[in-house]
Length: 161
Image (cartoon, helix red, strand yellow):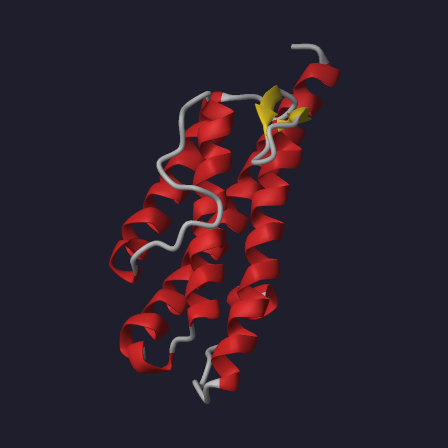
């Protein structure tokens, strides 16, 4: 085997493993938020509910775009707290299937929610999915703190302990 090809395959495997680790982290942090939603239904603001719906819907939509499928949820659709766990699990499983079947440099053609056409690499989309989730989880936890809910740490560095 050509050394440069071996190096490329090794780097690709390392990157895919890294993305899988980050996706598992996102999944587990989402599970913590879902548990808070389930245990504090009277303290969950509509804003927190909508932001979590949006975050999980967006992950679902990106998976659908990558696979060329029609998503089941709209980007800002308010979804039931009762389906959060299933949606979170499906998002993780589908993202893993994508990472196992496509090269990170694969170009994905898609339309955004405004109907604009784009082409991005799979690695950039996966990074965006993870970054987007972290961004909105920070908004959600801020909203939960306002309603006096004690929150577990969701920082990646604490997750790695």
